Amino acid sequence: MRVLLLSNTTTLSLSSLPPPRTPKSPIRSNFRRNSINWAEKALIGALGGALSFGLLVSSPSSSIAIEFSSSSSVQVQPFSQPPEFCSEDEGDETAELGSEPAVTSEGIVEEAWEIVNDSFLNTSRSRSFPETWQRKREDIRSSSIKTRSKAHDTIKRMLASLGDPYTRFLSPEEFSKMARYDMSGIGINLREVPDDNGDVKLKVLGLVLDGPAHSAGVRQGDEVLAVNGLDVKGKSAFEVSSMMQGPNETFVTIKVKHGNCGPIQSIEVQRQLVARTPVSYRLEQIENGTRSVGYTRIKEFNALARKDLVTAMKRLQDMGASYFILDLRDNRGGLVQAGIEIAKLFLNEGETVIYTDGKDPEYQQSIVADTAPLVTAPVIVLVNNSTASASEIVASALHDNCRGVLVGERTFGKGLIQSVFELRDGSGVVVTVGKYVTPKHKDINGNGIEPDYRNFPAWSDVTQHLSRCNMLQRG
Image (cartoon, rainbow, N blue to C red; front, side, top):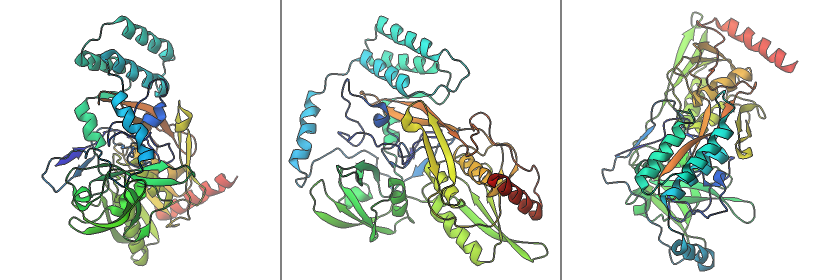
């Protein structure tokens, strides 16, 4: 079956953002009145710690889809505490399950209002948002909202008044679909959970009922220790999910610790995701065959994109490529974290990939490259007006760090960050919480990125352009 995801830049959500609070179940977070931290409630972070919804998903108009080869229905495995769990760690939460107050329709609307009030980044030119949003609360409190249907309609109207096409309401059915997103290929979602020592553990957030991992013996709450014999300590949920990816019907071995107390078990799981590479490449000859150019195209940023691009670039280098073309035309985004990781492949350690800015300090981040570049040869990045979101992050990172020139058309201009929050009745809201700013501090959203050349330049011009750029950069 097909599981559809959020259709904008999902989000952010970057691995540097804090994880949500420990859930009572794979989907529903444990909400406490008077102690709500909206940044922690964001679902973004739930899958990946790497992408804030574990994802940020980032396409401006089209949905990202993952295909399962299994025809069985997809459900979230209910939490069932294995006997190995430490009872002292779980007792308080069990008691809380039965004591949670009843959810009222007025309370659902009030909750949605508070999320927007605390987290929404107003990107319009209007400065009246604080006053008009406070009046919305007064209107809510003076209205009679007795049914869940009326509550949902009220939230829809309330969000529509913001004038932001990406901030919207999700029905319980829509939210459930999104929360079951699987980027591992074996039917599990991972998230990063800090322990008392400041270390980060990778825990199973949710399971696809009767999916590959669940059938093999993986359980809700398990800690992932290794994938195919490689220790995952220090890796993000996004990286480990990518390690689990592979061709359909092949096997991956994951080592897990069941519950909080063990035991530790190595489990072989057969993949059932039809994983399709978004990367294509070829070698082209120029200058009468005296030079070779490595051409690569990325159709979208999914969990396979970085791994497959690394393979393509290494093969092209081995074949003698001395220049590279990175084709991002018509690439409308995908997983934002995948775009960030790909941009790092071209940058020197310490160079800025992207800045994020938001109302909440948690969304004010500086993302930098942390390793040496995979390639140092000149790069032409092909862009057009359908190059959007995660693609614009890659394009601006290479451009602003003098690693590549942009050729083609002005890009789309989708630079907003959304987080997904669950409401207490199982519905949710997608809220714009931040925006992307290029390494040279230019706002992507609504502006796009102007190319350096409209037509394909000579490689000698590219080399001179990048040389001048680097000289100016150094001052």
